[in-house]
Image 1 (tube, rainbow, N blue to C red):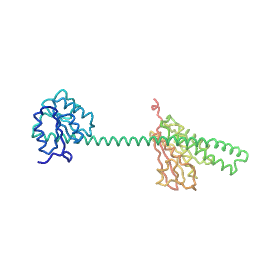
Image 2: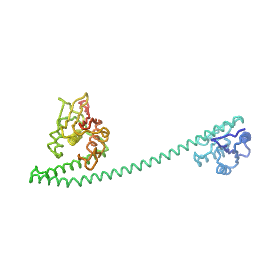
Image 3: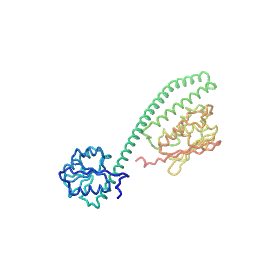
Image 4: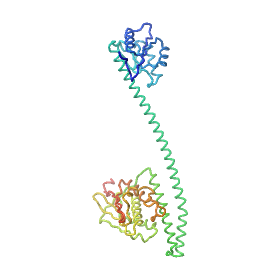
Length: 392
């Protein structure tokens, strides 16, 4: 007759008596198990049990349920051996004693018939083995999750440290640049009064200081946007025409060639309703889009606003060099330059459109780009109309 198998090996069964006279069912069980070539060991003392557990590592321990020593031993085995290594504990008896608590035994069996005992036992052993495998797998997964959590925490701490360092560098650089920049700007203004604003050198110096001032301001603003954990703007009714004028005033102060601002054409739909937005942030968006259009076009730049249902669509369009299709998605990346060569024609830090995207993202709206190389580009976004009911 074939031996009984559990996961490909022959199990070892430890049978306990711990009594002067063995119970009636014990000889039949032992004979049946031996007949099926299951390894059977016997123990009559607690010391012998622990010795066999350490040397033979049995898959199951069978003991009489009406023996107090058996129950105490079961409790000790559960307490001292972890679940992955502990054998199946089987109490056998005619009745279930009150002393058998749920935590003291794995299985309680009435004295089995010899014909069905091996089937009952093997099913229990297989279930017990499967449970141990699941526990082992769960243990490995728990360890792996703990390892991944530790790695994630370490990376988060490293990211936070690098972020703090980056913020400190940006703040210090911006601070160190602002003071000498103001001094240079004041000196250039005084020279312009003495020499005259028509001087080529004065024009060059004023243009250079304007570019540097814009670069410092944009880098500082981008850093603030990246590190603003609140992501909240104060939304209120905003008149689009007023924000456009606000953007043009700021642009005129910072643009190196003041006459270029006259190339901006404003096209507003009559009776345009106010939009729901942060006034200052919206002004920055329009200013940066106009700055971008003036930089890459020698022709006019149009800013258009018109109602579309419950929205107002704002578009800034230029007639300049345009953008290659494969570069449109990247122009909103921080510090990205369409032409990154050292001899590129167009200046700037490559952060203006990144700022535009961040601000519009926080307004929960997206910017759309249409462009054709050699013919120009248009940047459009929409904002909700400010209804009175939204503020109650």
